[in-house]
Length: 461
Image (cartoon, rainbow, N blue to C red; front, side):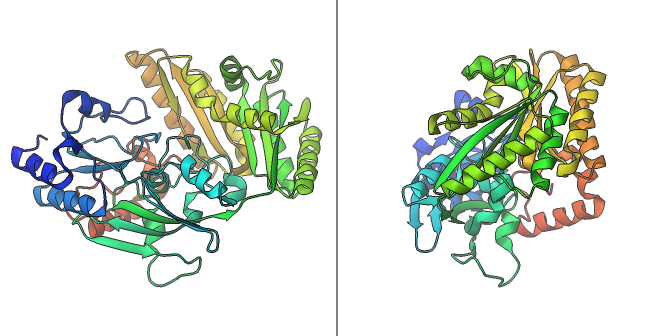
């Protein structure tokens, strides 16, 4: 759609002319997010400075029937912030204040534009831990992390973002401002709208402030690595670790292709003769950490690991974690288009899912590298293509991923464990939820957003 001059004038009056961008170069930059193969130019990009401006923009959009796509850093991997129907991209990065960090109440209040890493640093300065740990933490905003209910490297021990959201300030499509939840861990008054908005991907309301739970920072942490002949063997070792009664803070895996890419990128001296590795770590009292790492290493050894080592110093431990975090950019250096997907299966089915991914990749003639969160069954199969213009390669990759999602469902899993649905996973959502739940989602969407302006073409549309 094309916005009329009066609508553009209203937007400029609300946020200031300098914060309304409609030049071609600005629109191209916000036509996509970190998800490949999805793009659509908005009509205008708007940068509000506070809740009142967000409310006024949404009221204007509802009045004129203009789509609005809320956006933080755009680092999501499910095309959640691609403006499929044009309209307004509402960028919330100017709302970037940490309003409060309370050691007494173990909480923080932040605006949505604060990055996850910045909140983690502010918490650490007070001896506290912000547990959600997405791979894109240095750029991912807290608002986006909540909107997609992001996971991360610490998910096995600490859970995902929804476990730490106590309350939200949010603006409805009509411009009404609501506050859900609050500062309390225990509050069961009414429907849990905080949980409903967490993971709603900007389709129900726009988050303008969050009250989040923090934890006491662990006294120590350390990391180790176990090498295996195959990724399936590494998957079997995960089951052995859990059967031993251990819940590590980190339990990640990389296959051979990921290891090669990371080694080329970071030069960490990873073994060249192993088919896969498990990166494991724990935190807590120093003596507990070392005891747990020794037990995890022993479980991996019993499960067939060809080598198990523990980081000798903090810098080495941090380098190992950095290696896992750089798996995606390392793979991205190998081609023009990197399609990173997200599927989760019950932990005991991890090895079986790995085998299925390999078989699916071979059947469709595509190369798929796999890494992810072994401890909670969350896999990230990743396909690197030379170019998005190779339509046959794109078609084969998309067919392979469709089969991978079907395999995850067949094994009792899901089509997304942490990336979200967005536009990328919407075609597979009915297979996951069923027609009755999809109809219910649409009724919920209508109750929050009767004009249907918030992130149309995504969940609930």
